Length: 191
Image 1 (spheres, rainbow, N blue to C red):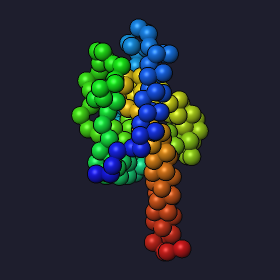
Image 2: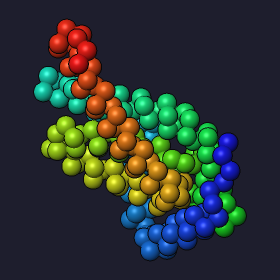
Image 3: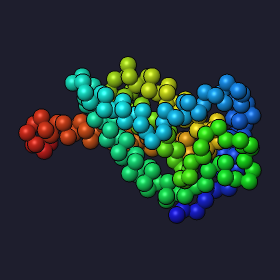
Image 4: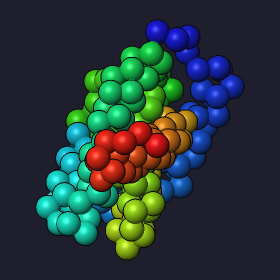
């Protein structure tokens, strides 16, 4: 496990998280954010999206690319990075401002945000492949990422890491799927 995040990053994260909590906390968002965050649970929404897209010829390649990106994120993000960094969740800190959680608190490590990672993997693929799907996916991804901060289960740098790694894994997936399709269509000839 890597050492903790540098103190100045940890302090800035806590300050920003508390500022978000103080600025946005209200009954309406207390009711809405658990619903929004649940759309990212286990990447199920994005898995269903990928499978649905694979059922139609016009969106099949995008669906396959989303699925590959999600698999990369599961292996590298949730499997390796979370365990490598081993970062505690904000609600576990003594300085946490949370009094009563609005959702069941996760038990895995905090960096990067898995909800954000999966969401931005899917949204990035869809922005590359078809903006008609990509723009709504991006809006939903931003809402899911914000929900993780609002619910006090991730630091801002966890969410930022999820965004950056999600976009990177999506680009890798798109390139890999496009290359595989090109090889298949050309009878396996290497180019």
